[in-house]
Length: 339
Image (cartoon, rainbow, N blue to C red; front, side, top):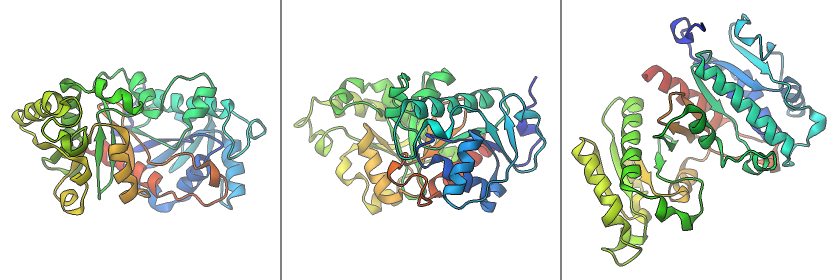
């Protein structure tokens, strides 16, 4: 039986997946391993390929002298601060930085798979993920739109949602990786209520008080009393909001999304529940691009991620900002402590 690390360690042990080898993930992981402030927050276990990390470190002028262990032995390795789990999923000769390929898609999935196993058996307290390429996953024959769906499937959760979190603005999403034409049919009262409740539960734990929740409408002007759309605000969204209010949640909506994110409204709101991907991702990335964190609510596993992509155009050049990865690890540690 695996010993629960939470019983024996003061700092949480956070798995960090390397992400797509061709992207900025490898250099961000090396930078995280080298960051003294991050090491104060958590013990890092990087799931990736040691040879790739070493080459990324060399290419970006970083130090790489960390303990390395194979997939079968890392749990028994004695280390005081950090360890790299060498999964031997890909060799540098099999890809080029900045170029999408099936081989990097397969490797990035293997890092995620190993980290999820570690979280499920209690070997790590949480998982923070570096960016992957949806196109590379597809080329590898892996039918997932992104991290969120992989974690939800492996966790077996039927009630989950994406949250983009920062101190300045936080959004959760009723639908995520789908086309706009598909959104209305995916909206149900039950689904919206689930997301409101998951949002309220998460923000209550993170901020230590009941949060203020604001729910956005789907259509322009939140439907303008039924003039726009097919009445989704009155028939689906508003009943979900009223059900959440009856359950004791401080919730408002549906309100027009074009005015939801102004400064005065943000200051009075802990979390915005958004109906589709860009309704919330655009304001989050406009306001908090370098510090926002992507996390999946409703899972048994604590999972956070950077709020940016693989940045193939600057990969392996030492230009990537690790602010989002730093915040992802910090938020994972905060959620762990709050549980």
